[in-house]
Image (cartoon, rainbow, N blue to C red; front, side, top):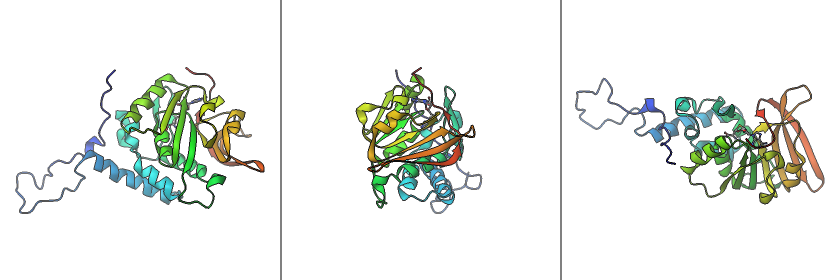
Length: 258
Ligand code: SAH
């Protein structure tokens, strides 16, 4: 089935003659005050988002570059395009949300701190598993810092939406699967990193089994106080190292496909 083109960004910034120049011929060509194409407009807004992320404490150059490279507005509903670069989570349908840019950047920065990459500030992750493809945005960002991305989604409607969204980018190294991410995806294992976009009671054993030595899991998990917190698990030759970090708010990790 043919899919409608994604909205251009942002519709409001399309250049028009200003009141001052309309009806007059300037002696020299006037450089437009606003970017001349929608894609340039989104580049400028995205660059501001990246500046804000840096000011909020995201320091890893690989993450800032990746956040600047992926056009977030192509992953949200046309009615929300003008909010695509605000630091807010947005609905993506079927009761799910795309995480706010700061959370995506923070989690990927943590993932890049995997033991195998310590001391390699330019290093890339190997194969990464993402649980909860949603609209496909984070998978595209992960693709900027990893050699290959396997992303699994349990809701068919979102799996298909992500496929449509990502088609534009022609990313040969992003693989989308429909399935229950609670059991991971053994065929792609072992993974250099596993990142979850949905929070469960605990980190499933399958993820730990499918993690490479030197790899890291970053996942929201229920905390003792009833909320959710980010959990980081490193697999080293000496065993597992687990840390609980800041409180977060993710949609629930659910089993089965729907
Ligand atoms: N990374 C996504 C965020 C999506 S929200 C993005 O960039 O848009 C989290 C997603 O996790 C939801 O789409 C939800 O359906 C999915 N999810 C929840 N439990 C899951 C499971 N067991 N396996 C796979 N996906 C799951």
